[in-house]
Length: 317
View 1 (spheres, helix red, strand yellow):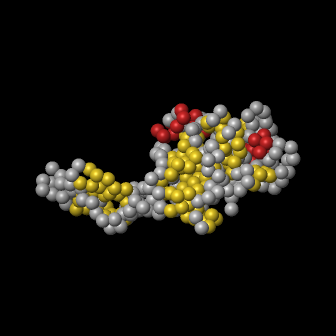
View 2 (cartoon, rainbow, N blue to C red):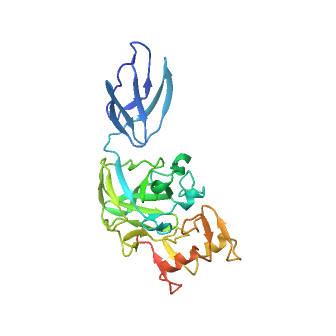
View 3 (cartoon, one colour):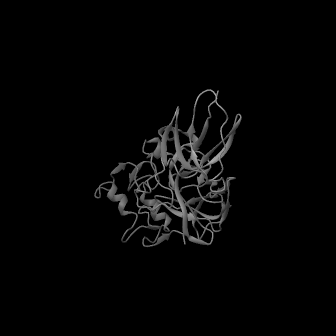
């Protein structure tokens, strides 16, 4: 019979498993990006933040791994909800990318050149992608926590999964999203690979108790002017930033329309292409330049629909 778990002091280097039989001692520490502690029959168990395993070794009858423990206060949890304009209709988002087998299991932002602060390389699994209904995965989104005293300073950023109902979760689709930072006030920003990023107008108190941040109903003011598109009372991220440069642009150098044409071959405007594409503005899994449900018209509409040289700028500091 094993003796109880041992609870070690916070911030102590931890030996993960020491085990022997009969009257022997059993101690374990689990390594996790979140970090926490809890109870088990006859004892307690704790696990660390941030560091996976920094060393391993063997002991008689068992294995030892070592990591660094952090207290619960060195993490915050956030329940975020947001809508993307591209796949949005009738109060929810369609899951065309998932349904067509196009969702990547690894976040796309590193490959796009985004420099993460602390996070990045988040992954998910095929069983998560396979789920349908209101919890179906729409795509990866980008989350940033910014300094309460300097909203241009990104303290931590990571990617997470967006569901059809607007909920945002980690790679395992577990809610809430975890950030390994101390409890404090932060500006929260959220972006997508072909939509304009938005940020809370004010800093928000974040702690171990999950904060609810609903960016779909106007209850959280956003930075700047017209930062979100409003459709039927729902607040959405503006679609059409195909070049991921913070501007929706229909004509001129580095515009967002030409990549759609190039993606379908560059000459025959009626061609289409299937894939996980930045030019797939409505996110149905098909790049389309003309005809019903094309990706080009959304860009023109979002700059005003009349003057092709207009632009729409991301409302970020």
